[in-house]
Image 1 (cartoon, rainbow, N blue to C red):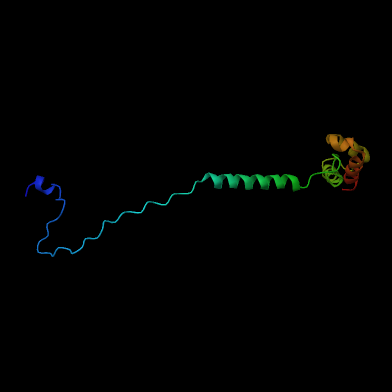
Image 2: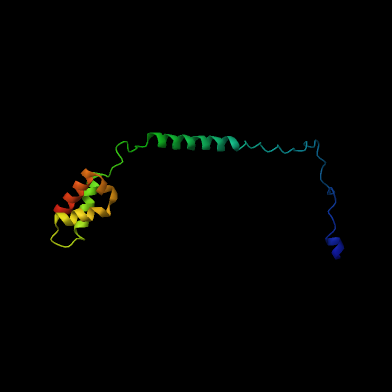
Length: 123
């Protein structure tokens, strides 16, 4: 046997040696076509719509500061308490009144200024 015989193409039909011939041959099986994939764009559009709805509801329902734009009084008092530790001891009312100038919004609001000085004085 040489190399050309080894790599030769196989015959189209194999010869039957002593085998009975089939009575009826089965019809060739035809492969079913692959099912068509549904388009993706409706899912993407639906996801974008749901996301927009969630963002819209969050914007509408999120609590907004409906009050004044002035500083928060408890926060002003806390700033006063924290400032007290940085001032020379004993702390005087004049020291606290001078220190509130470091916070312009608190200094501009009368109530916030009073809360800052109270926190600064009473720590």
